[in-house]
Image 1 (cartoon, rainbow, N blue to C red):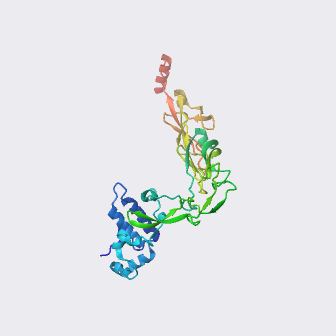
Image 2: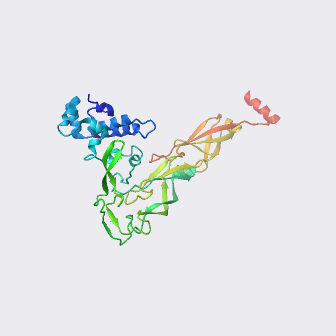
Image 3: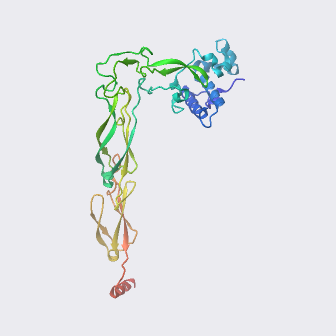
Amino acid sequence: MSKDYYKILGVSKGASADEIKKAFRKLAHEHHPDKKHGNEEKFKEINEAYQVLGDEKKRASYDKFGSSFEHGQASGGYQGFEGFRDFSNFAEGFNMNMEDLGDMFGGFGDVFGFSGSRTRGGKSGSRRGSDIEVNLNIEFSEAVFGTEKEIKLNKSILCIKCRGNGVEPGAKMETCRTCGGKGQVTRVQRTIFGQMQVQMTCSECGGEGKTYSHKCSQCGGSGVIKDIVEMKIKIPAGIDDGQSIRLSGQGEAGVKGGPLGDLYLRVRVKKDPRFERQGFDILSRAEIGFAQAALGDKIEVETIDGPITMRIPDGTQTGTVFKLKGRGITRLHGGGRGDQMVTVTVKTPVKLNRKQRELLKELEA
């Protein structure tokens, strides 16, 4: 009885090739025998389903013949799934590109005992530079208005001498004899599936397709060197504590022409004892005397722009909040500034003399 490969992979019959590949990677990662809770039989079943549904011709035959799929393939040289399960009939002619399985096992080469350095989207042998994350401390006022900071990074940069190709200037270069300039070689590998022909990065040229007589004396052939780099960074007004700024291409240099990594600046805003941030508003407190609260007055209030005069109306109670419009945080990407909210506390007089007591009693009456 034929198996339902769509059900095994958890996809519909109308699923696209990308959806089928995505489902296969997810399930293969989950059930791989090297995993703690892996299942070898389930893993083989998933792979069996993908080898059919992942191939346009085999999938068409499977959809057409249904339960008779095995018999329908027999006349075409396909020997049914018993031979497929142990891969014994596929030692020759069965080609698997390891990139098709991506990094679902955290590095497919680690599972099968080989490695490659092909960067997706880049040339063989190249590798993307690492990202860098740096904490950057700024003052409260700098977060409000924005600032410019100068930082120093010890990072990998492109080798000046060889311009990143790893070759000593003037050295002789020629096509790799091992791979014929392709950067990859085909090998028969014994795996948990049986024997398979797999494409591997050429060890002779490191996937470049070329060999050279001398490596760069400055970088040792890697194409990158370590150096101290000074950078001026613009911090946007309104940035908050814990937010990050991504600077594309400012990370580590890529190896053998690989793309640059990115730089992530995680901003740490120092606290200001006078203010507290709430979104784009600033919260602060002001203390007034009993007479000021009762009769009204004008007081000096600290703002991020400096001290200003604020009017206290008569009869003001403890906890009253006054809004200072436009005295808050600059909104990111424009839109003006928030407000400053000043909470007033009325200071109750203590240790009153006799006359003061009598006056308060008269007011109460």
